[in-house]
Length: 104
Image (cartoon, rainbow, N blue to C red):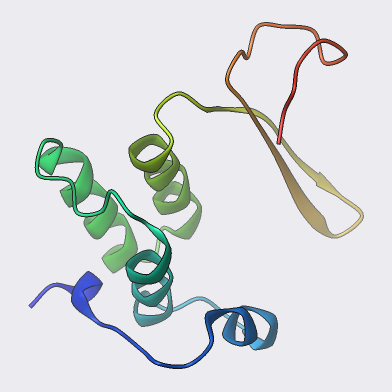
C-alpha cells in the first residue's frame, strides 16, 4: 500500500499550525488533500519520485517535486532563510527582474 493513499478527517489547517515535525504520514495527508494532479497517470515517473522522496524523509525535495508536478509552469525564483524562517518565491517568468515579475 502506498504511503500517499491515506486520508484523514482532521482539519489540515489545524494540523499544520500545530505540527512540530513532518512525518511521511503527515506529508501523505497534505498531498492527498491538496494535490489534484497526484498521482499523475501521464507522469508516473514524477509521481513515483515524489513518493520515494516522502518515504525517505526528503521533505524539501518532495515539496519541490510536487511543485513541478502540480504547477508545471511555475519555478522557484528565490529560496531564502532569514531570521529563523524560510521564504520561497515562485514565478512563471524566472528571468524577469524582481520589480517586473508577479511572484507568489
